[in-house]
Length: 261
Ligand SMILES: COc1ccc(/C(C)=C/C(=O)O)cc1
Ligand SMILES: [Zn+2]
Image 1 (cartoon, protein in one colour):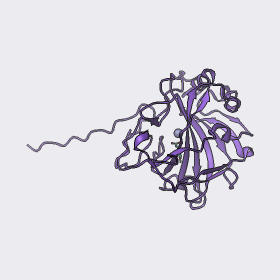
Image 2 (cartoon, helix red, strand yellow):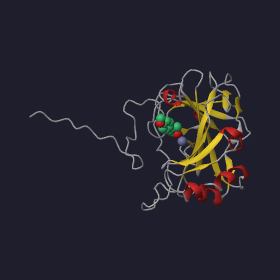
Image 3 (cartoon, helix red, strand yellow):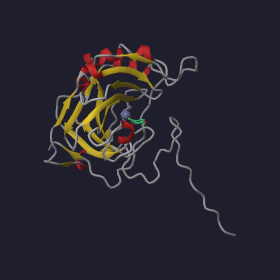
Image 4 (cartoon, helix red, strand yellow):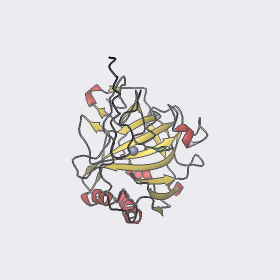
């Protein structure tokens, strides 16, 4: 008789019970950045970062990471230049990290994981009226990725680390009203850039990624502070917030460009 066709279920990721791969996705993130395959683009501009520390609002444990959110009702904290055609407004930043220092970043460089990765999420308020709409558009978002490596104590990060016990549980928030995220971005101007996606649901293919070549250094206590956060709400059985990174996605028909030779 007619053989029945089996539809393989999309592999589900334990963290968010959503498919690991977006059906038909051609520009998913994160990816491995093979340094020797990246192409130097002399037309790439320097990235210009202008943040107003007083736009900082609060820190929120959303059950997947901790987000530091900003007032994006005006062009007060913006980035422009680099691969971008418009200026983009800072909305929030967050991190991804591992249970141990051997892994934790989302992107890898020549298949090497860093213990953590910072994402500064910006949206194109020149073209789109709201963040939610920009999330759905190919040129809607720009995310700066910064690798964290184990090393010296990071003074600027410590003010953030000191606030984390107050957002230990999912859905807790603490006011955090002056912070300049540019202290978390290496002064070295070198970056890679490629067209990709969000790495948590809705996983939309709306991100111009700008991945800084140089990592920042943080110490063991600071990484451990991330690992004492919880995925779970107060009163639930405690699950440590660790390994909140998405698996690597296929490069498909994409080129990673570098701003440096
Ligand atoms: C509209 O809902 C959204 C949820 C998450 C995100 C981000 C910014 C995800 C990520 O960082 O991968 C955007 C919109
Ligand atoms: Zn992220």
